[in-house]
Image: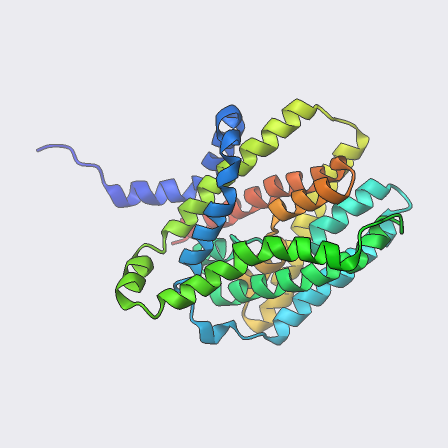
Length: 304
């Protein structure tokens, strides 16, 4: 009899290690994958479209837990900034960005893999991004110690112009497709592609990050402090999110909502409006949250 491969266990193993494989490919193949950075917005759009296509819109309404998590982000970011600014202003700016940075567009995809409430995270992603679009321009002068020539409306419009096409538009498109049964059925059957689209985008992001790190070759105490600081706030935000969400039955969802960040946005913000060294914290956060999520997925699938 011919030897056949048992595909299901192999696919399960592949899914379990998709994230570390993506990191490895991005680091090793940074010279090639780095040139695909222009695809990132399209990948994010596609990923969110597939994610929103299977969401029950009735479950997207705001809850008290949404409010608690947003307040934690706002208050915690300000407190940490004032605690750190006397030690190192770059460290204070970098860590504050890692805290108030809105939820990653991929958070709902990872929440599904972790068997959490995808609707809760999808709705929080929308709310957090919109709130931070207003909050960031308000606190920007404070972060720059009032040495800023950028007005509130100018920065708000730049941030909103990033959020709208990548977050709101996929949501609106999925809403339209719901009215087209044949197309909606095809999309629904292939909604699992969202995870693999995100994994490919992770390869590109890691490749770009590795390329920049190697070319810049900037290593110093500030860089090390930013990387370690990002690790601490990454673990802390996942832990606090899970702790706050537990009484509401949203341990996994709240942890992902608060801990998994839109680091691409954070890197853009740091590079555009702060000393480029500040972006190190967001770059390191990508690594830390990916490792943490990899461990979570491994533990969930191992126990199934």
